[in-house]
Length: 411
Ligand code: PLP
Image (cartoon, rainbow, N blue to C red; front, top):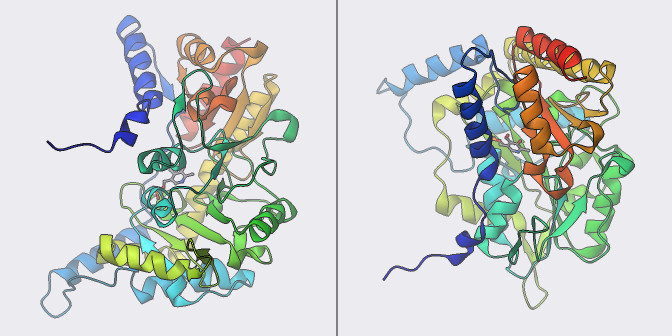
């Protein structure tokens, strides 16, 4: 008899998006004429930049030609892409990285989910609450989290770092020891960022406690304010303790194309039970070369075009478009009297529900009265209750319409 990994049974099921779909379908069947606007989905809507498409087509042609065909590429990614990543995303900010410290992959979702494999089962992990659910669920599957407490909506062995209004949605250091810390800034779902000084507190903690920071900066491209750090490596000492995940998904519309990268500096040591240090970079390389065969050549060629002069301009224009939506949502909600977070350096706007309304209650009200669909904060963790996420990835027209409806119908 084949036995299962029973850790999978600890997962309460992907309740959030299926429940949203269920409620939307039910409403649609009752009100078929309602013109529903979706501002809940974290997926981009604008097409790939022309420079990217052109590079991908050219690469596909090369693959169809005996003289230029390529088979398996390097598991870590082609040098032509890694070189562009380092020289564009890091070098201008004074961050030096070696070519073998960048690992190209098919997504930040898989990398943030897979990275925990390197760590022992007895490591204590910390996540912010609310949180991007992948960090939690991947550790549940591995067996590192203990049981799920339905009442609390939390796992017994995870240290949760509440991001609450009184603290401007920023996490405070844990009061008990932790070994693995997942941080995501600009944050999904709150849209908030940390300053360099605030990030340094985490780097210092990790250095003092021999902990590792798993830093997800999938939304780095949306940072607008000059003084907000774009990489954790802008903080002194981060090279010894932090792994950084980045993605072309939101930066360049690659959600359906799939390309990302993870930086694992060679300075990071992780320890065996004898206290002997091992290179985290080497372990991740070993893991990737065993389980991953690289990203397709046309996709990496397309990603490299993100850094061409044309590509940069086109991508910038798309991000500007989304960030104007973010401004419209943020300012519109404020005018309507809502308390809002995020939306300045991120495509997410985190709003407080009025009159202490539950997240799902507000979801229903917004859908039935304004015909606008968002994401209930409770789906991102216990501290998300009483909050609601709207995204800037819609069209301008729909975004403006949705905010107008909220202003007039959600009094
Ligand atoms: N990290 C965060 C915080 C995200 O919100 C998302 C997608 O929504 C991802 C990672 C996934 O990125 P990718 O498309 O590269 O897998």
